[in-house]
Image (cartoon, rainbow, N blue to C red; front, side, top):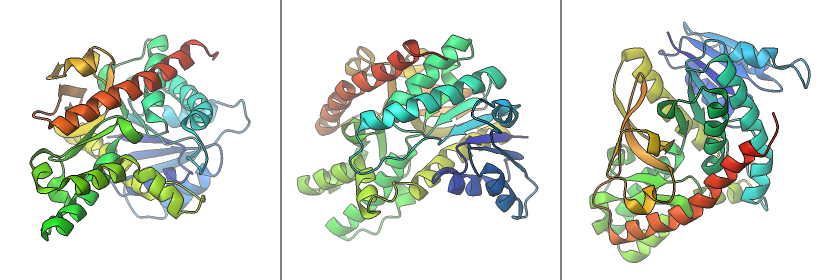
Length: 338
């Protein structure tokens, strides 16, 4: 029995994510919340024949929290794609100003109603919204470091796809992106220069110019989508797929009591961890890292071994950028009212 609640279920990411979750046999109840149209999305999904229960919830007024609380009641997993997408000309700070309040308010209610639930943050900027979630849960006495994640899986999807294409162009090798999963991974953060692709043995197959092109595509893939959609959207379908990959793994661990391998943006300093270099641990406490995930949450974090000189340099760049973005999230909670 696993209940998943999606907050922001009627949005560009929320709808396809909810569709994918509707088809997951491990999810026994799917609760969809949004400020508009969540009931319509739920009814639409209810016409898909599965054994799962699906319900839609929406506020009756701007101050109504009863529907949100009903959606969160008994939730095992809370997924938050709520907020506005990035648009052309919008700075990271512009995005933060809007989404920070949304995430803080939703996490506040989750901490009150389902304090033992897993919290999965998709709302950008993840490097700041995850610290917001952590600090808000701490204030409520509902924080568990093993159960709060920023979903950075899209960086891994892009790396797998783009690396597969690069290898084919360089040496004609036809390598399924699925075969790269778990070997080539993205660590660090979830924006621009904070994203650090770790290629392991695949790095030696790429000339410098190809590597640089690959690095840029992985780090700035979001810009590519925004430009291609001519200002009419951002990465929604790929992000929904990424969100589903992470959440489905989590649900699988819960339903079947399994230990699975995952990567996400976590507060690593309060978790069992190995190999975290001083350049990271001495300056920040959040980083996207690989870990073992079980029914009780993160079991063990392992920093990737044998980084190349280029990758080590990128980690240093990422840390400098992340420090400010993390602090922005922390300070937002401690200087705002709720």
